[in-house]
Amino acid sequence: MRRRSDQESETGEHDSFLDIVANIVGILVILVVVVTARAGRAPTVSIAGPQPLDDELNRAQRMASSLEGDVIELDRAAGQLERELEARRRERDYMLTLAAAAEELMRREREQLAGADQIAYDLRNQLAARQAQLARANETLANVKPPQNVVQLESLPTPLSKTVYGEELHFRLLGGRIAYLPVDELFEEVRGEGGARVWKLDGELSEVTETAGPLHGFRMRYTMERTEIPVAQRVKTGRTGFIVRLREFEMIPVGSQLGEPLEAALRPGGQFAYRIGQLDPQRTTITLWVYPDSFGTFRELKKELFRRGFATAGRPLPAGVLVGGSPQGTRSQAE
Image 1: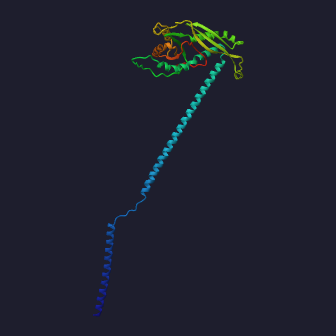
Image 2: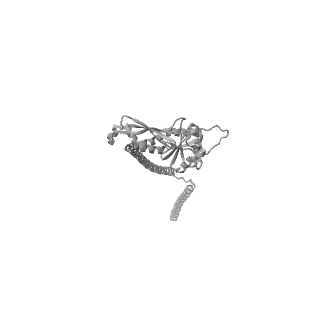
Image 3: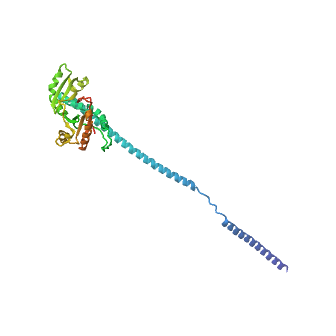
């Protein structure tokens, strides 16, 4: 009886232990479920990485790359500009060399001229003596107009003056009449007689005045002077003696009614129309020596010459002053 009671007592204790273990396991299960549930409902906390810094770094790298490209482009442009500047410098130096060579060639050619050739050379230079005065007077002539009740506007190109170097014909406008000035022809006559005039300067005379012509109603009165060759030039060229050169010249009319009126001059049978009809407008300049009483004739004649394609140079002269020049003058400025 007692042994059964002991067995029953041991069985009851064993069951109690199992119950305790089961309760503990149940509690653990409940805790796991609760923790899991809470973990599922808890907000997700994310750790922010260095994304903003990466973006800034990327932008900085892109900006650096862009600036590097700009620097390369600027360096390339600077190199191109430097090459262009160098090319312009070489071109400028080349042109300066050509100009210096041309001046030296002209100087040597002039030094080689003697006697009559020197006279002809100086005579042509003399024609250039008054070109600057004419260029300044052209604008004044263009603005001198008689009073009119009706203003008439004429459309002409803007005048651009240029120095005359090619073929040049001279005419005198006096009293409304146009007269041909045989300047070049009389120069040729002076050249042909130059040798006969030079001997007069081989003595005590330092200058001599002679005349050429008449031709086409004009004589040329010219003065030649003797100039000793400078010592420096003697040493350089080996030449000795003196140089004969033109000092001045004047065109002297042999009559009072030379030439022809404007209307007759422009007709097909007129002397003026005939002369310019034989010329090439692209290679010839017409120089008009104008007295105060013929400004109107000058304007009309200039318009006609422009219509025919000729460049025109105007040279105003005071009343009573002869057409003339000297080597110290300037060349005509044609428009």
